[in-house]
Every structure is written in C-alpha cells, then in structure tokens.
Amino acid sequence: MNDRFTGGIAAAAVLGAATGIALAPAENRNEFVRRIQRGVRRLTYVLTHDRERIGLAVGITATKIADLTQYVIDRVGETVAASGSPITRIRRALARHPNLRKRAISVDAIANIILLQGAVEDDQEWQTADLLARMAFPEGAIRNHLRIQRPSPAD
Image (cartoon, rainbow, N blue to C red; front, side):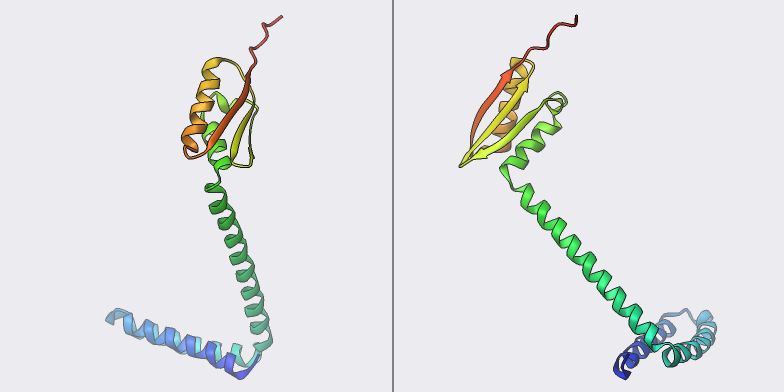
C-alpha cells in the first residue's frame, strides 16, 4: 500500500473526527475528544504496522462491491427487458388468474403473432384466457389455439 493511500485513509479519519466534534452536543464534546485522542493512537499504529492487510482488505472489498454491482445491474436489466415483453405480460396475466394458473398454457410468438396453446377445461376458461391475453397485449395479434379438454368423470 502506498503513502498516498495511507494519507487518504488518515484524512478520512480526521475529517470524520472533526465532523463528529463539530456536531456533538456541547455536554458530550469533551468525552468525544478524549475518545478520538485514544483512537488516533490506535489508527496511527494500524496505519504504520498493518498497511498490507489494509490494502488487501480494501482490494477484496472493492472486488466484492464491483461483483455485487454487476449482479444487480444484470438482474435489473433482465427484469426491465422482460417486463416489456408481450409474452411475459401475457404469462403474468394468466398466472394471476386462479384457475388458469393451474392449466398447461404456453405462450409463444411467431413473427408478430402471439400464440396461446394448451388445454383448458371449459368455454369460460377459453374466453377468459383469450380476454386476458388481448388485454395484456392490446396492440398485438393474438391467436388462441387452446383446446377445451373436459375432465373425465372419476371412475
């Protein structure tokens, strides 16, 4: 670790201490100054004897912060991109419906046409799925290829 970096750490500590003294209530200011004086001795020791460990810790921390930042950027980017997708909007609308979420309905796109495929139990579910898809993507062309598959009577 170089002297410039060490000076930066020391300057940050001094600036923090000065701010603390300035903002401390008058009745607590003397105690705060006493604690800072003890802390300065400890900080001086650490800066002169543990420079390599400080540099390593700062480097590792910076790497972890960069990794976390990239992870968040990737996830937010995927979410923003998916939220605008017509397929995602339709899937989300179908997943919110209490009966349709239980059905095996796939939503696909061919060119500018959105296809609903799968099976539902009755005409009402077919119409509901069609309506939800058209409401979720009103500007697009929807082709509802859902088949009505009535449940077989229990044996």
